[in-house]
Length: 157
Image 1 (cartoon, helix red, strand yellow):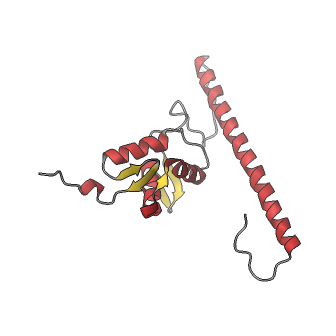
Image 2: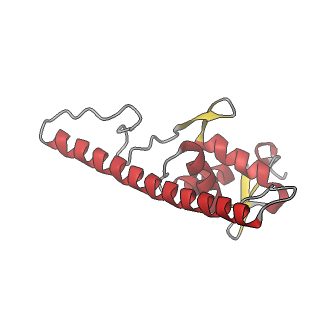
Image 3: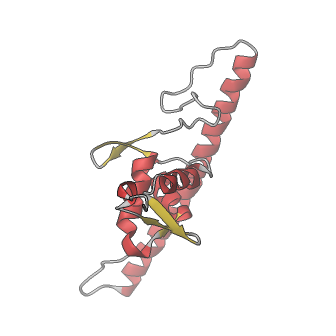
């Protein structure tokens, strides 16, 4: 859905633009899925090559350091003009959600869009759990909230 079209508009022209954007977004999602499948297949081929003693050089944007290709705390490049970790990105999302809170699935989609690839399905949940253990996040059902006082909580005497 396109927002922000103002002034007198030609209904037919606006509809054509909307249809084109929807088509392009659909094509883009197909390309992204194809790209992810290709990357996964390349990782698998490199792993198979290692079994047979073959050194396969993968493109520099493919991380093969971890079994699933995702480092424990990967950096997100280009976010806020620098590098931040998944943990910091999750905290940012919790802060932005404010009193409304946010579901882990939403955080995952936002971060995947930022980095242009899929995360392991447990990454965000485990990060939220660890933040809750440190007192920086809490949850109510499926909704997570930032706890700004988290690390400063005193033990009752």
